[in-house]
Length: 228
Image (cartoon, rainbow, N blue to C red):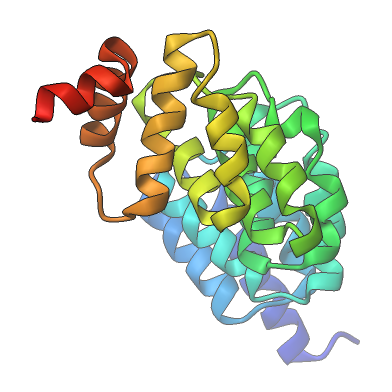
């Protein structure tokens, strides 16, 4: 005979799982909050699966929080498997959640293919996760890999790349100097804006880009002359 408490819990769990796929985003948010507030390993598969398809940003964030409440030895292998998913959102959300868990043993799973992913959101999330998880001795290699993406995408993509590189610290300086001498003016401007952010984290990105473009257009010597 099934104990009453166990049967009641099974009913509650079934209701939560149903609510996690409800049509109303508020219902899904509350379900993810409830699961995270009473974390049980049995919810892991449902949480990971929902991350791949959840359309609402706030619900996705709550799903990530719920996953971070569970033991890493349970969640990390399942999230690593999602990095190979054909679905871009599955890859992106898994990367985001792994960065929040912060288990550095995941670092080898942050592959060049993720850092160069054709989906901008996946690539941006991979850059952020890589900066969190990279071992100190690998920071230079990561910076060189990220620098190959200079000039990619729209403002948000470029800002994400600049922030990721700036977060790596002084190790990026020689890589930025090389990129600032690149034959492509877009690459030079992006690298220049990143160098400005590295020196002055409070600098506005748009101002930094404008300044870098001005230097690209005028050349550093003409810029100095124009300020005299």
